[in-house]
Image 1: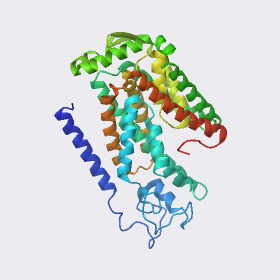
Image 2: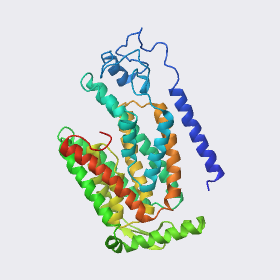
Image 3: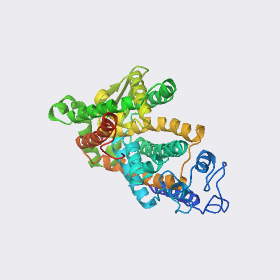
Length: 403
């Protein structure tokens, strides 16, 4: 059950998001560019900043890669841009928030599928590659930043929920997160202009397939025998979850020892431990791989924690959310504040409301899903991600959406 104070808090959050959405959907100012008012270098179609200047330099017309001033306004108020159904965006964002808060990964991937393929923004941005590469790049950055807003929102809500439920290993999440922040800053700075991403995409997809295979092995009878401790903790937690909230809280994560080289804790009475330095190094490597592709690292944190550290999925999702939250804050600051990336606050507002709903549901439904099936859900999604990047890298086109 949700406490009344908690319900009032989230009602206020949803109200603020609705106000932001309504404000951004207000009619464009009379001075905005249109059929009878040409665009200027300062901005176009009611948009200012870099994207407004880029729109002002885009040729007009009805063909691909052109702006038709008489067409209905769509995304960001741009004439002829895809017109997004905000109800559909909200529902898709519920799925994004739920899957991320349930398995601790794939929020960014699923947000990208929505923006790029379902809502058509990927094909729309690609159409300007020949007529206005600058606009193409700015729209792409907007899509990426929008993805990260959803991931950050899902990570924030998931972290808060799992923390209250005592299902986060805070030292592990912080170690992974700090390592990922370092990697997210250093790797692009060291490799910018020196690495051709296409060379790595196929091998990265292959690596994800291998990771998925490794996790799938962990769901087999032989693999489960090797992870007896995690299985014991998972089964004990599910018993406490069925017994009620007090027993569930008592079975949460309890720290027993903390030092720079060793952290020990118990979950559902079962002892676990890890080396924070190893976790930080893992976060650094994961962030480096993620930085090459411009996506979050949740789907790499999860197999690291289940395979290397040996944790059950019931505490992996929340710990992954904490690590992802730290890296997303840094990344979003870079995109929005440093680079001035455009965000459609009406779309992001509707989607954030959906993400919050999904991320509130996920931790509450996860405890009723067997640990084995949580891993299998992850394996299916890893198969999707792996095949997509494998085909795009080695065959030049993704076999799966977004294409």
